[in-house]
Length: 334
Image (cartoon, rainbow, N blue to C red; front, side):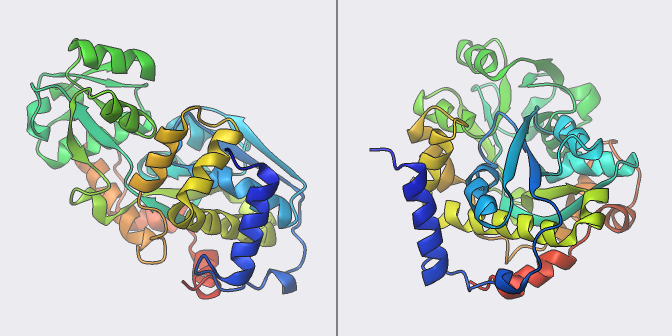
């Protein structure tokens, strides 16, 4: 039976207090109260950012009485929501944020969350990335996370993503149906799409960014915040990042409970797909991976794809702040 929210919160609290999750007791008891009581996060169709949803209850127990979610699409739209102040924070794929940062958007990357979750799924006409030349590839929208990520992957193997790939845009259900029919050649799936495709035996995986190099060697998603919010509210920022990182460990170490929470909160409808997502995505490695290496890697890949012109170091200086993350790495020792 599905665990109730109260039971889940109780489990989280008990796990945090006992160290069962491998989390040291943090110093929130001596923190000053957060400067604000309201936090706005982003809601997107995918559930790879499950820590953002699992963290809701942790945020409420950490001094935030009003936790809300602003619905948008992934990628540039989610980044825009942060930049214009419609939301305060979001877990987001690293690459789209770099486009926003180069354009001068007031967005800061604050810390890494998890390693790859995207999977390139294709018909038998595509056996490797170079086979995408001249093929019809579905993404949700141009400038979406799928489009930006696959463009960087294509450029890395010598393709010109703007000329060599025939991009088509479909909502997820239609894209999956068209792949099953063979009217498109490939799509870039993120959870729970990839889990559904495997369950229905549609297509085959060409690249899994969670297991295939070089993509698996870098963080996929990070926590991004509005620059002005971070500047004005350093205590609240620390509490938000801490809750997200603890929730990331919950997804890694308590996948069944995390999947139930995602279902109960209405962010997904299929428990088996949600559970498989928790098991497939590499959560709990945020201590080991260097987010600055990730920014440098994707900045170079996007430069190859013709999507950014700035140097990695300029983007790092302009759009990242790892100070709170470094503090929390000491507090939340695994």
